Amino acid sequence: MTRSKFLLGATLACGGAVAVTACGDSKRAPAADSATAMSASSSTDTVKVKGVWSDSVTAESRYTAHYVNGELVVIAEEMLLADSTSSSRRYFYDADYAPTRFVERRTLTAASSNSTPAQLQSLLDIFLTGDTVDSTSKQVDLVAKTVQPYEIENMRKHERELFARVPTTYTAPRINR
Image (cartoon, rainbow, N blue to C red; front, top):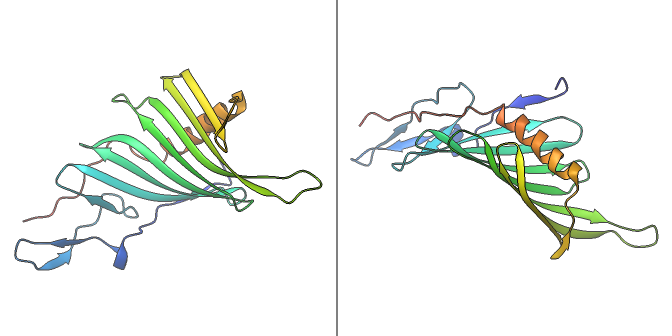
């Protein structure tokens, strides 16, 4: 996408990770493999890598790629859309990095020509096996609605765009102890 700009940003306090040694001394942790990405790792081999993406017209997205034992399992995304509504999406992956589930919680604005705009809450849930859609469900203000094909396609295209921005595997920087 030519109008896209991709910025990885760190959201950790003080602009970097801080490690605490067994003696209680704190020192700056080593930088992540990517010069612009920051990560937080724990003893359970889970890593989160955060990033920011914007198409500069319709949305700004902040996402977090979650890794377990170095393998991508979830991309969590928070979007602010041009109409000032928001969307929260989760993309889940299997061991072969094929998508298994997409979930979107979104605030919608609805109005007719003679009424005040109302805020509605939407929940879209899509289960997949590879490229095949197994099942879908959608609720708007707790009322079941039909999932439209364009909604599935929108989620797929956006997931592919984010998936291309994160590595499928990640090795957390280790601290010498």
